[in-house]
Image (tube, rainbow, N blue to C red; front, side, top):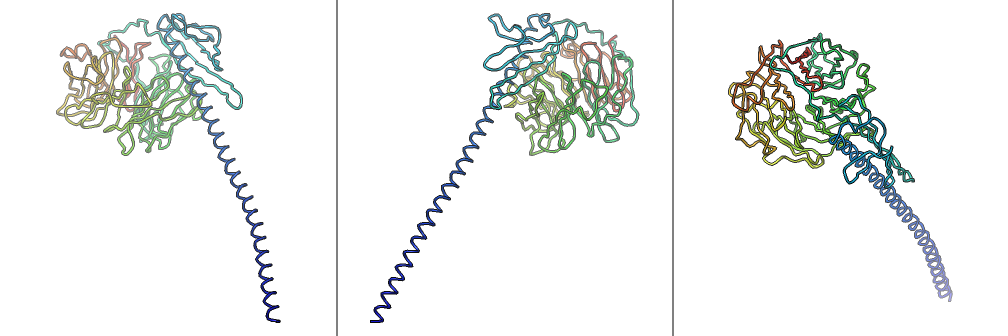
Length: 495
C-alpha cells in the first residue's frame, strides 16, 4: 500500500512539474513573440526611413537637375539673341522667355513652375559681354537651392582686321632665370598664364601682365602650383590646369585677380583614375575634356561636368590606343593628337558628353610610328604635327569638309619640318597658321594653309628662337602671337 501511495505521489509530482514547465514555456513564448514583433517593427521603421530619405534625395536631385537645365538654356538663349543682334545684349538683370519670334528679354526675372530665373549681363566693350545665369527654387521641406552658370559672349560677327603675318616681327622677349620648363599658354583679359614643369625648380605656373605687350611683367611671383603643369585653359575668370598631381590631376583656380593669385584661390579639383596622368584639356561650355597619357587599365579620354558651386563630376570616359597628347574641338568632335602607332589622329564624337564614342572611321594612321604631338582645327581643316622622323613629313593638313574623320583625297598635304612639332595655332577665317617646334634656326614658322592645300610652298616666315618652342597662343582680339620656349616668353605682331 505504501508503494501505491508513493507511486500516486510521484505521478502527481510529475504532473505538477510538467504543468509548471508548460506555464513557464507559454510565458517565454509570449515574451519572445513580443520581442520579435518589436525587432521587426524597428526593422520596418529603418527601411521606411531609408526609403523616405532616399526618395527625398531623389526629389532634391531632380530639382537641381531641372535648375541646371534651365540655367544652361538661358545661356543658349542669350547666345541666340546675340546671333540676331549683339547690341540687344544690354547691361543689367533680365528675365528670358521664348516668344513666337525667338528668345527675348522680359522684366528682371521669370517665375515658372516654382523656378525663378534671370541673367545678369555685364558689357565690357562693343563686342564682349559677361553673362551670369541664375536659377533658384524653394519648395519647402528642405527642397530649396540655386545654381549659377557663368559665360563670356563675344560678337563673332564683328570683322577684325588681320595684319600681314608674312612680315611677322618680335616685339618682346621675357626670360625667366633658372629652368622653369615652360609648356603651354592661356590668356585671360590682359594676363598670360604659362604652365611649367617642376623637374628643375619650375613653379608649375607663371603669370604675366601684358597690358603693354611690348613689356610683359611677371606677377604673383611667390605662387607655386606644387606640381608640374601641362595643358592649360582660361575661361570666365577660371583657370583649368592639367597637372601630374596624383590626386588633383585637374585644378581650377579663380583668376579674377591674377596679380595676387595664391593657393586660397583654388576652387576645386578632380582626382582621375590612375595617378597624375592628365596632359591635355579642352573646354566647351560647362564640360571639360581631358586627355591622359597611356596608362592601362584606365581610359585616356574623359569628359567632366564643371560647376560654379559644387564639385566636378566625371560624365564618361573612353579607352584610346596611345596617349592623348593634344586636343582640339570642332563642330561637336574632339580631334586628338595621339601616340598610337596605328592612329596618330583620332576623332571622338562629343555631342553627348555622357556617352563618348569614336566618330565613324575612328581616325588616321599616319606614315611610320612617330607620335601625333599637336593638333589644330579651323574652318574645314585639321592640321596635325608629329615628333621628328627621318622618313616622314612632320606636318600634315587634312580636309574635314565632308566628314569628321578625314577621308583623302583630297589631301593630305604635308610639310617637312626637320624636327618635333610641339605646338600649333591658327587665325580662324584667315590663311595663317603657326608652327612651334625644335627645328634649329626656325623653331617658329608662319604658314599659308591655302597655299599648302594647293601644293605650293606654304612657309611665309621663320624665326630663330634659340630654343625649342613648346607653346603657342594667338590673341584674335589684338592680333598678337605668344610663344614660349623652356625659359622665355616671346611676343609677336604682324608686319
